[in-house]
Length: 306
Image (cartoon, rainbow, N blue to C red; front, side, top):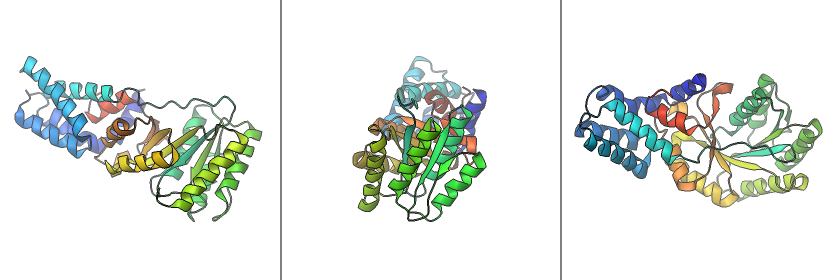
């Protein structure tokens, strides 16, 4: 568990440094004051925690300060983490297996969000947990996507069903389901083409993939997850809302959090859509995709130990 928490803390290092500088560095062992609270407020807004969450955190700290004028920075950090964990109650997605395997997970999102690498990393994670996994390279629209997923599959020793660029993505999904079923795979991960919700042809392709999968299993895909770039901050909320309205999402994977100081966007997405967060991308290595844990996240961003 310590190793997992360390990944959270390291992955959110830019967000952590912005916030913990106020709660640890600026007045860590000293009593808080109006100036330090203003700096904390600014840090929380900069990290994209949003008005509602920022106000809740500050209100709790001020309430504690009124009771104890000797309240210190470390105490304020502990309070902030408790508030965050409370706000995120119910946000942790659990990947439950389907009644009849394979469990089909469709990964959706815009170009550059990290869908293809997420598919590979998720396959690797499930494999290390003892599951059998099949990858479906259904991003046949982008020239390099199929080769990219094939490369990851070779590197991580994961089976894959793929075709050529420009192939019918739904046909690839159909073949992949049959292959996963015949092999007794636990999970089929479907990497789809990056799309904007305004691109009707690609949205129709996504609907076609769903229709084809449902010929095999009426409940497929069992999970439809939006892979969203966490460095977009509050803009990721609007993206998630658009995809949810057009396709009906069941959860989120938030990527690229290691390269941004805007790690608070996770909270905004949850508050806005109440879509469970399944995994976080906290780095470039295969094991840097980690299941979302609200407590670890809340304590990590405030620079606290788990």
